[in-house]
Length: 273
Image 1: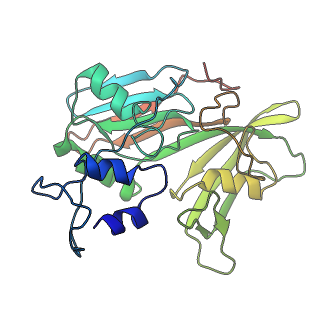
Image 2: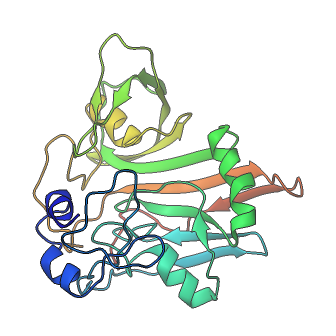
């Protein structure tokens, strides 16, 4: 088992020390020994050491809270859920502590670098009904983005293509001649000199969909570190926020049938403070 752990984990996990300290355990809490025979289909549990995370600037603004859901206006650079290098600096961890809701969890995805409206369920029992809204495309999502103005671009336009993103790859790509799996309505809302504010209505939710679709139209979003070119940016560099905002969420509540609509209060240019 020790040999398997050394092969399985990246260099930042100190397998030797964790084995010696009995920090790898089986499901029954028995410590994993270095010379244990390899076990197939076996869970091994451990808590990894966390780095000191610098505070992400900006405020999590609570737009709505009731017994079932919490809706917030998320700042850029704050992860929605604890993962990878961002654990304590995540919406879920911060609000579980701040609101006293130990079962709080997100019901949809919002990229770490994207700002705006994010919905969470207060308890496990409420997560399913609200997640189904997103899975069934029953939520009306509106985004806004600050990007270059192109006078030759005929808008509104609906972009449809097939997007794919392989595990481990930073960027997505278009798969030519494949059936469309991503669709976004792009509209011009306001011109600001050489830039413009675009209103975006995605009908699907593929990874990096809006960023890819605007890039494909020749108007990549201001501050995007991936499109059109990948820039090496430290995960703790909060100096250049992506100018993409999850502006509105609207839906019919699956529990009580009321019409709900939540709107971000953030304006362009989005700042990290």
